[in-house]
Image (cartoon, rainbow, N blue to C red; front, side, top):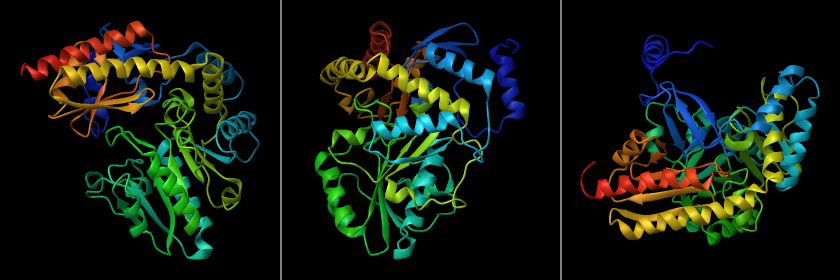
Length: 400
C-alpha cells in the first residue's frame, strides 16, 4: 500500500468514510509489541493496544507466522463443511474453560447475540424469554446487544428489543426482585470494562450462581474483554470458583484478528440446531489460526503468570498515584485490566498522554483505563506510567 501523509489520510476519511467515530488526529501505520508508530514516524507507548484486542501486543511474531501460513493454504471456506482449525480452537477453548461447546463468530457483539438467542431458544418451551443485565454494563452495538447494555445513553434513538431489565451491579437482592417466571437468563461482565473497571464481588457472583440454579435461570458471563488471561486467569469467572452456563469471548481471542466465540454447556448448546443460527465468516480458517497461535503463545511463554506479576507492578504504581494526588479517588481492576477514577473529567489527562506519545483511554468520563499487553515490557510500561503521573500532576495543578 502506498505511503500516505496524515493530511492525505484525513482527506480520504472526510470524503469517503461515515463520521460515526470521534477520531483523534493521528493515523497509526505500524505496531510492534507495546509500541506503535503513526504516519509521521512518531513512536507511541500503547497501553490500550487494539482497544483490548492485542493482548500479546502488536503483531506477535508467532501470530503473524500462523496467519501467513494459513493464508497461503486456505483463507476462507464456509460452514457447510468441516474446518479443522475451528475444531481445534473449540477444543482449546472448551478445555481451558468449563467443558462447553463453541459457536464461532466475528466479534463480541455477535457472540452476545448468539448467547441471547440461544438462551431464549433453550428456554422457549418454558415460556421464558426475559434477560436481566447490570447497570453500567456494555455488551455491544447490535440491536440485541445494545438492548442488553445497561446504559441509557446507548439506547437513545434505537428501537429496543423487548424483554430486558437492568439492576445495579453487585446487588443480588435487586436481581431477585427483577426475576420472574419468564426470566431465562442473567448476564454480567465479571469486570465491567467500558462501565469503568468495576469488579463483581465474590458474594454477588456466588450468590447469583446459587439463585440461578434454584430458579432454572441461565447465567451468562460476558468475557469479551476479560477473557484470554487478561485478569490473571484464563477467564475472569474462574476467580470466583463458579461456572457460568454460557460465556462470550472476542477481543483478545485472535490477537487483533476479528473473531468471537459463544461457549455453552453441552445440555444448553444442543438447542442450537441447524437452521437456528449461523455466521458466514464465523470460525474461518484464518481467524481460528490466529486464535490457536494466541493460545500457544500464552501457554508457551507462561503469560498468565507474567500477567499477574505485571499487575502487581501496575497497581503498585497506580496506588502511589492515589496517595500522591487528591484528584485520584481510587485505583481498581484485576490483572492487566486497570483503571483509576478521578474526581473530575479525565479527558485532559487522556489528551496530555496522547500528546506525549502514550495511548490509554478515558471511559465513563472520569475513569482513566489501561489495558496493556500482558507481556508489556517493563521499560515501556514504566515509560507510559511516568507520562500518566505527569498528566495527573498537571491536572491537579490546573495546568491541563
